[in-house]
Image (cartoon, rainbow, N blue to C red; front, side):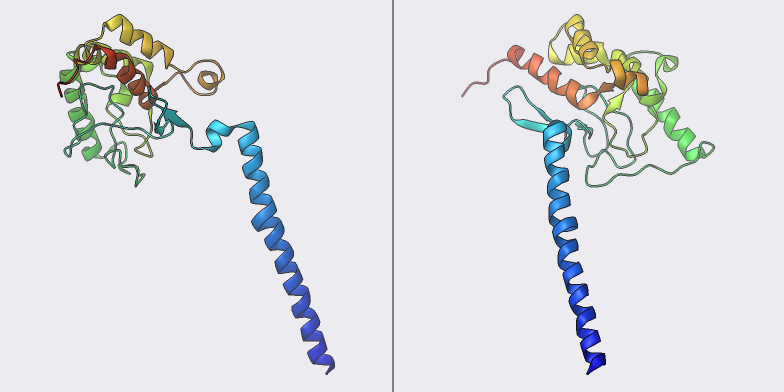
Length: 209
């Protein structure tokens, strides 16, 4: 009997602790973290969602939105992102895992440099490193200001905008202040392309019904 009573006492203690832990760790703590996030940083807590010119949610600023065909060729109307080992598929995230001395990586860099140079009408030496190398995630939305500036003429021509107007958009979307101080200046391709789309929309011819 004493043994049974001891077991029941231990089971009761365990059950009370389980209920307490569930309330504290499974309910109170998640609600507190959610509330603090909504209070202090609602934009980041809700996924860093960018909106289009109509105010509708369009994309997350944390994930690149690359308009590309099945072969991985990016649409010339938009600023191009860095190469991606997963073809910018948000359902996966990965790097190529090729070492710096791997011939496959060297060949890919050479090919990418030639393609970028041809697309932008510049010499291969003018192509910045981030234009030919993938990020670790394959979904990085940021490119260097040098790569963004290299694409201004093409994007402006494809959208019927002046190069000055597109250059201004690049400048507006180049990070500065603390973000640039902690890392280096960068340009968010996803946000920049939404700005280009908004700037180009009024100049697009109306479609007949």
